[in-house]
Length: 74
Image 1: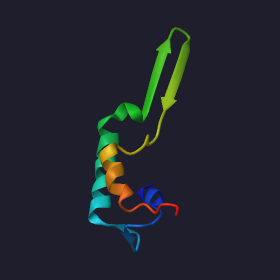
Image 2: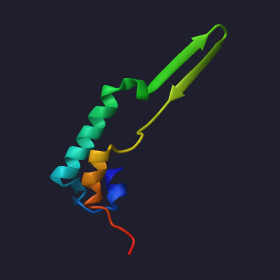
Image 3: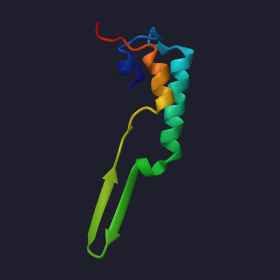
Image 4: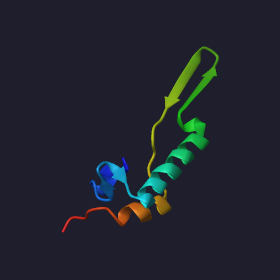
């Protein structure tokens, strides 16, 4: 996702630069620290609902780092 966001900039041979790797690491930790993002079920009486989620975006600090590499339209 970071590679797509930066349109491949900041990656050499598929490997991210150190600061992009740090962004990926912190985003993964944030996602895993809040496991309720992964799935949640609620039931009341005969009714039940399941919520499933995925990655919800970059934090402002992460965007700041990624935007230094992102290709912009000219």
